[in-house]
Image 1 (cartoon, rainbow, N blue to C red):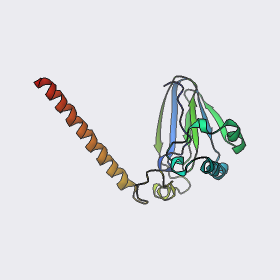
Image 2: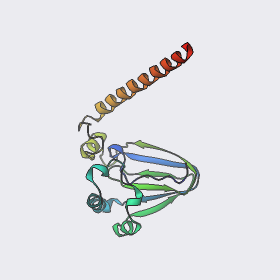
Image 3: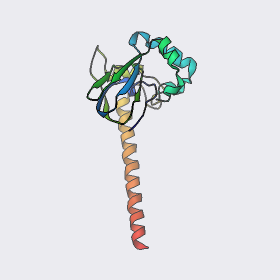
Image 4: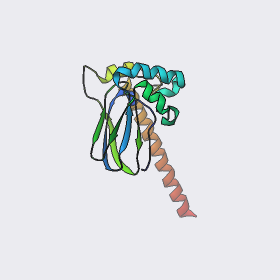
Length: 169
Protein backbone atom coordinates (compact mmCIF):
# COMPACT_ATOMS: atom_id res chain seq x y z
CA UNK A 1 0.00 0.00 0.00
CA UNK A 2 1.14 3.56 -0.58
CA UNK A 3 1.11 6.46 1.85
CA UNK A 4 -1.00 4.69 4.45
CA UNK A 5 -1.14 5.69 8.07
CA UNK A 6 -2.64 4.47 11.31
CA UNK A 7 -4.57 6.49 13.84
CA UNK A 8 -3.15 7.14 17.29
CA UNK A 9 -3.85 3.93 19.17
CA UNK A 10 -2.87 1.35 21.73
CA UNK A 11 -2.93 -2.29 20.71
CA UNK A 12 -6.00 -4.46 21.24
CA UNK A 13 -6.20 -5.68 24.84
CA UNK A 14 -2.99 -3.67 25.47
CA UNK A 15 -0.88 -6.42 23.88
CA UNK A 16 2.53 -5.94 22.31
CA UNK A 17 2.94 -5.69 18.57
CA UNK A 18 5.69 -6.57 16.15
CA UNK A 19 5.99 -4.98 12.72
CA UNK A 20 8.47 -6.03 10.04
CA UNK A 21 8.82 -3.70 7.08
CA UNK A 22 9.76 -6.13 4.32
CA UNK A 23 10.32 -3.93 1.24
CA UNK A 24 9.51 -0.48 -0.06
CA UNK A 25 9.69 3.02 1.33
CA UNK A 26 10.39 3.76 5.00
CA UNK A 27 7.68 4.12 7.61
CA UNK A 28 7.65 6.94 10.17
CA UNK A 29 6.60 5.98 13.68
CA UNK A 30 5.47 8.54 16.24
CA UNK A 31 5.37 7.14 19.77
CA UNK A 32 4.82 8.30 23.31
CA UNK A 33 7.49 7.44 25.90
CA UNK A 34 6.11 5.56 28.92
CA UNK A 35 7.10 8.45 31.20
CA UNK A 36 4.79 10.81 29.26
CA UNK A 37 1.90 8.39 28.76
CA UNK A 38 -0.37 9.98 31.42
CA UNK A 39 0.20 13.48 30.02
CA UNK A 40 -0.61 12.27 26.50
CA UNK A 41 -3.77 10.50 27.69
CA UNK A 42 -4.94 13.69 29.45
CA UNK A 43 -4.31 15.66 26.25
CA UNK A 44 -6.29 13.17 24.15
CA UNK A 45 -9.16 13.11 26.65
CA UNK A 46 -9.36 16.92 26.52
CA UNK A 47 -9.32 16.96 22.72
CA UNK A 48 -11.48 13.95 21.83
CA UNK A 49 -14.48 11.95 22.97
CA UNK A 50 -13.42 9.28 25.45
CA UNK A 51 -15.40 6.66 23.54
CA UNK A 52 -13.15 7.15 20.49
CA UNK A 53 -9.79 7.21 22.22
CA UNK A 54 -9.09 3.53 22.50
CA UNK A 55 -10.88 2.27 19.42
CA UNK A 56 -8.28 3.35 16.85
CA UNK A 57 -10.39 6.34 15.89
CA UNK A 58 -8.07 9.30 16.60
CA UNK A 59 -6.59 10.27 13.22
CA UNK A 60 -3.03 11.61 12.97
CA UNK A 61 -4.30 14.78 11.30
CA UNK A 62 -6.23 15.72 14.44
CA UNK A 63 -3.05 16.20 16.50
CA UNK A 64 -0.81 19.07 15.35
CA UNK A 65 2.95 18.65 15.06
CA UNK A 66 3.40 21.54 17.52
CA UNK A 67 1.26 19.72 20.10
CA UNK A 68 3.18 16.48 19.53
CA UNK A 69 6.54 18.18 20.12
CA UNK A 70 5.19 20.00 23.19
CA UNK A 71 3.91 16.69 24.58
CA UNK A 72 7.33 15.03 24.14
CA UNK A 73 6.26 12.58 21.45
CA UNK A 74 9.21 10.88 19.74
CA UNK A 75 9.77 9.94 16.11
CA UNK A 76 11.71 7.09 14.56
CA UNK A 77 12.09 6.05 10.92
CA UNK A 78 11.74 2.35 10.11
CA UNK A 79 13.65 1.40 6.94
CA UNK A 80 12.95 -1.86 5.06
CA UNK A 81 14.29 -4.93 6.84
CA UNK A 82 13.87 -3.43 10.32
CA UNK A 83 11.48 -4.81 12.94
CA UNK A 84 9.62 -2.53 15.38
CA UNK A 85 8.21 -3.85 18.65
CA UNK A 86 5.78 -1.96 20.89
CA UNK A 87 5.66 -2.43 24.65
CA UNK A 88 2.60 -3.91 26.34
CA UNK A 89 0.14 -1.57 28.00
CA UNK A 90 -0.67 1.99 27.01
CA UNK A 91 1.94 2.29 24.25
CA UNK A 92 0.40 5.03 22.13
CA UNK A 93 1.77 5.17 18.60
CA UNK A 94 0.90 6.01 15.02
CA UNK A 95 2.60 5.34 11.69
CA UNK A 96 2.89 7.02 8.32
CA UNK A 97 4.19 5.25 5.22
CA UNK A 98 6.49 7.30 2.96
CA UNK A 99 5.33 5.49 -0.18
CA UNK A 100 4.68 1.97 -1.39
CA UNK A 101 5.73 -0.69 1.09
CA UNK A 102 4.97 -4.21 2.21
CA UNK A 103 4.95 -4.97 5.94
CA UNK A 104 3.70 -7.68 8.26
CA UNK A 105 2.53 -7.16 11.81
CA UNK A 106 0.97 -9.11 14.63
CA UNK A 107 0.04 -8.81 18.29
CA UNK A 108 1.61 -11.08 20.88
CA UNK A 109 2.02 -11.44 24.63
CA UNK A 110 5.24 -12.09 26.52
CA UNK A 111 5.19 -12.35 30.28
CA UNK A 112 7.44 -9.34 30.88
CA UNK A 113 7.64 -7.59 34.23
CA UNK A 114 4.97 -9.88 35.65
CA UNK A 115 2.41 -8.80 33.07
CA UNK A 116 -0.12 -11.39 32.02
CA UNK A 117 -3.11 -11.48 29.71
CA UNK A 118 -5.36 -11.57 32.77
CA UNK A 119 -3.75 -8.43 34.22
CA UNK A 120 -3.93 -6.59 30.89
CA UNK A 121 -7.57 -7.60 30.59
CA UNK A 122 -8.28 -5.92 33.94
CA UNK A 123 -6.59 -2.62 33.02
CA UNK A 124 -7.51 -2.36 29.33
CA UNK A 125 -9.68 0.57 28.24
CA UNK A 126 -13.34 -0.29 28.69
CA UNK A 127 -14.01 1.30 25.29
CA UNK A 128 -12.04 -1.46 23.59
CA UNK A 129 -14.54 -4.23 23.04
CA UNK A 130 -17.02 -2.78 25.50
CA UNK A 131 -19.17 -5.92 25.52
CA UNK A 132 -16.24 -8.13 26.57
CA UNK A 133 -16.59 -8.92 30.28
CA UNK A 134 -13.58 -8.21 32.47
CA UNK A 135 -11.74 -11.41 33.27
CA UNK A 136 -13.46 -13.31 30.48
CA UNK A 137 -11.45 -12.39 27.41
CA UNK A 138 -10.89 -16.01 26.38
CA UNK A 139 -14.62 -16.73 26.40
CA UNK A 140 -15.39 -13.45 24.69
CA UNK A 141 -12.91 -14.20 21.88
CA UNK A 142 -14.34 -17.71 21.55
CA UNK A 143 -17.88 -16.26 21.25
CA UNK A 144 -16.70 -13.78 18.59
CA UNK A 145 -15.06 -16.58 16.62
CA UNK A 146 -18.31 -18.57 16.73
CA UNK A 147 -20.17 -15.53 15.41
CA UNK A 148 -17.56 -15.06 12.69
CA UNK A 149 -17.83 -18.72 11.64
CA UNK A 150 -21.63 -18.51 11.60
CA UNK A 151 -21.52 -15.41 9.36
CA UNK A 152 -18.92 -17.03 7.11
CA UNK A 153 -21.08 -20.16 6.73
CA UNK A 154 -24.16 -18.04 6.04
CA UNK A 155 -22.26 -16.16 3.34
CA UNK A 156 -21.08 -19.43 1.76
CA UNK A 157 -24.65 -20.78 1.70
CA UNK A 158 -25.84 -17.60 -0.01
CA UNK A 159 -23.12 -17.90 -2.63
CA UNK A 160 -24.07 -21.53 -3.31
CA UNK A 161 -27.77 -20.58 -3.58
CA UNK A 162 -26.94 -17.72 -5.93
CA UNK A 163 -24.80 -20.02 -8.08
CA UNK A 164 -27.54 -22.69 -8.13
CA UNK A 165 -30.19 -20.11 -9.07
CA UNK A 166 -28.07 -18.87 -11.98
CA UNK A 167 -27.75 -22.46 -13.24
CA UNK A 168 -31.55 -22.87 -13.28
CA UNK A 169 -32.24 -19.71 -15.25
